[in-house]
Amino acid sequence: MPFTLATWNINSVRLRENLVARLMADEAPDILCLQECKSPVEKIPLEQFQALGYRYMVARGQKGYNGVAILSKLPIVDAGGRDFVQMGHARHVAAQLENGVVIHNCYVPAGGDIPDREQNEKFGQKLDYLTEMRDWFRWEKPSRSILVGDLNIAPREDDVWSHKALLKIVSHTPIEVEHFNEVMEAGNWADVTRADIPEGLLYSWWSYRAKDWDAADKGRRLDHIWATGDIAKSAHSSRILRDVRGWDHPSDHAPVFASFDL
Image (cartoon, rainbow, N blue to C red):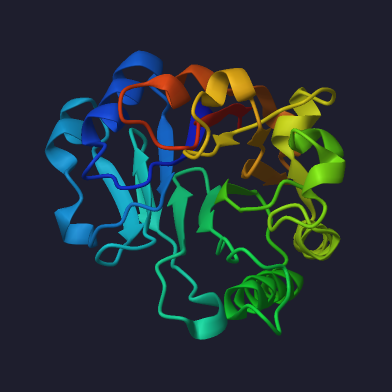
């Protein structure tokens, strides 16, 4: 069952409903995973999405913050959601396809501005969140699974505009990258995007603070698509839709795509 999947931190699904619909109409991924929906599940604007063929949804939501949703043209069933670090945040949801493949949609905490858990509680929570993800995957040993989302870490030197400048900036610090890699190893996850695009600078996020984000191009690859080793070789055609970052009133993230032949 071949399908195309996309992941996108939308930064408010209600505010950017028309952008989601535009992506659905223009690109038509079979499955679209959204993060930072900032909406209770019952208030996610489904009518327009359903009219475009996205008849299925599993989601976890909360008012004004966080929130993850999986919208699909293909039948899916709810496969649960974990509240890592027990913060009461809607940051993870899973769905299962009819062929048994499980899709995990994750929104890892950003971690604040100071990369020190003693000075910044949010940074400690981020590291603890990743540690609990690691331990869960060690215990559960996922198979035939895909994990996507805004993981809020750019792990490689060519995933940021300047490795040297960002070594002490949250999202690219060595301790975050170490935790990120431990999560990958625990679940036998493969980085689908970099398997397809192994070399070169690659970004999915550009700050709102830049006057001209496109010209400055100080990006980071914070959004990821992984697959477990047993299905990783079925993935292909990865791409990041950079132009979406330039749409009117955009999210600061661009959608990441991959196709799977399963």
